Length: 156
Length: 156
Image (cartoon, rainbow over the protein chains, first blue to last red):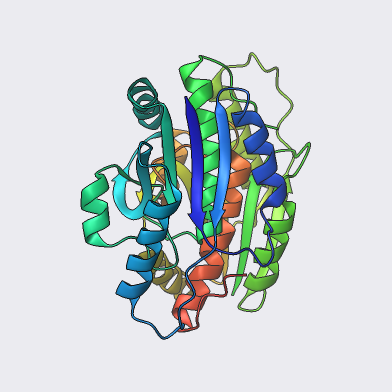
């Protein structure tokens, strides 16, 4: 099985770099894992929200293999406890060999894209900056593997 | 008004340091703000959970001024959206001149402490490491002030 975290965005300055590196290193003990950053479509900042969403969704379809399974991270998704997220991960890895967890762009995903891909996860009722959402997800993915392996959580 | 983020814990290695520093700097544009780290009570790691909780709660009572208002960050608390957290913050700052947001130790707060202090906030259904909980809180506090001031969120 391989897992990929996909996001659309450009990082001018990454204040989360140390923490991200640490969790990616830990996740790789359990699974093949990559982070894929896609450059946002070039659009005027005054373009309508729907245009951002549709261009970003086209980009995801174009860049990701058609046999890969999409799980969207979006505020409008389902909230999990860490235990239930670990169970969800366990089911998914038994069903799919390539899983993409995808953080959308600044405007999130369209209703139709969310409906099509069904698996939509929300990390919190709070709105996070996209970059922090990635960090929170990485930590939960690591935590999920420790739960599935009955291992103590390594806190430092 | 002054706000303090209080936590009980010792940081061996702080992978969140850059991000924390950035949000603390931004929060200070809006309010007097400090972070207070309290050393955990010295107890054997095999001590019962209740003993950790009661010693930590005694420490908080001892170290924080009796006129300061406590708001606990705890998994068992109430979840807010960022908008509703900003409103909550607005009400609190109109009622109290010193507010302490408190992240507990490894075992969280006791039922009686949570009941006594009433204001208990949960950042997510997910379990976060305590250090990440602090970072998520700092970002939301900054976000709350931008919402209350009708300012755009500064993403980088």
